[in-house]
Image (cartoon, rainbow over all chains, first blue to last red):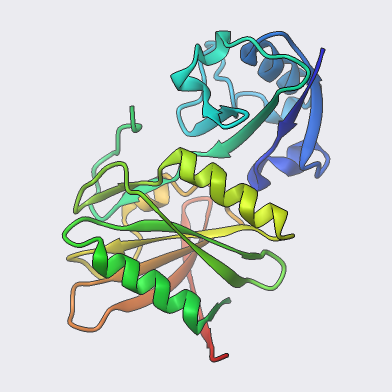
Length: 101
Length: 135
C-alpha cells in the first residue's frame, strides 16, 4: 500500500524536486528500499548498502523516531506518513562525534 | 548572505548564553530563496556538552513542520562555541547535512558574543555576510 514520504530539502533534487512522494511498502524498511529503487539517486542516502539505516539521517513514522520503534521492521499503513530529516550535529573540537545513540 | 531580523538574532544569541556552560543549538526557519530567517527554533542539545552538539531529532521534526506549514523551510542551523572563535570546526564540516543551509556560529569566547555565518559545500567553508534587519 502507498505510504507518504516527506523528503528533506537536501534529498529532493534526487527525487525530481518533490517534497513528498508516495511509495509502496508494509514496513519502514520496505518503503525506504522502494524509495531508493524508484529514485536511484537516493541509493545509500537513507538505507546503507548493508541494509541498515544511514546513521546521519533520522526517519520518523508520524511523530516518532523509528529508532525508538522497531527501526526498519516497524509496520506501516496507508494512513501513516514517514519523514526523513538529516541528523544535525557538530561541535567545537575535532573529535568525531558518535551518533546520538 | 544571511538576513537576520533583530528579534531572531537576539533570541538566538540569548539562547546560546542561557545554554552556558554547554553548547547551545537550534534551527532557523525562513525563505531559502532570499536567505532571510524569519523564525528561530531553539532546540535541546542532546549531547549536553561544552564541545559537542546534537539537535534533538524530535524538535527538528517539529521545527521542520512548523516552518513548512508557514510556507518556509529550515534554512540553517546555529550553535555556540563556548571557548573558541565563531568558525566551523572539522566536526561541523564533516557533519554539515545540507549544502543549501546557512551554518551560523555564535562565539561566546569574548565578552561580546560574535555571530558569523558560513556555507559548507563539499567540505569547503565559505563565510557569508550577515545582515541585521532592524524592524
